Length: 118
Length: 204
Image: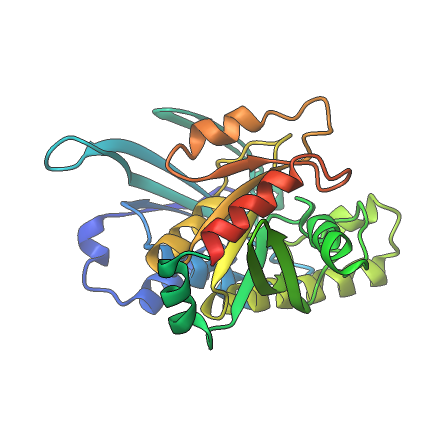
């Protein structure tokens, strides 16, 4: 049985990376069939760039795109008037591998189809 | 027209209003674009179908004018291809497409998604069309909203398909409480009068 490789990347490892370095680091791994689990999230423009890059890399036979899931936590502003969601974990994997994802407020369950991996 | 509207009008005279229709594939963007074009110009804009990614190129309708009392909104409609993080040609086979046709549709869809994202640089307002029968909290919707907020582009969340019994527009309001959510049926026009009112106010 083929295994599933998961890469856990700390926010420290990404803090000096440029947006494009982050995106290619993700895409290269996901195209190989790996699942990337990142501490923290991407900025809105990085998320848009990630979708754009994914679309350029799609090859109808082998790579059909990505699935992205996040876990957030509530964070209050300084005066506590407004609540904002902050992404604490981002999971990005090949769309044909990440089959079932169930999300509750503080739990994310994923079932991977390793038969489709690679 | 009030004094402030007059002054605002002087500054905005040369600014072209381009309103982009954004959202997932099959959320009803082209159906809404057609409804707007039909209501205010008497004609359709694009073809619609149940097969996802029917719109694979940006469709543009210039000079649409919505009139609301003594105010009006003069704008171009930019109907964009649905944005997704994956495009699998095998999904199109379920709709009866031949394999070659499905593969070519998938390739065109990926280009369409890139084009839709590029258009975010040029739109001055957005109707984010969300299918009220499905979960609104998706990475696509979050990415679109995040980019609109970062670029300070005004937008309205359109909770579409309220004609379908399973539609739950209240869920969309509850997950996006800080944004304007308007429930409509682009198919039969329910709620569009309210949408037009809000568009005139928000995009002028």
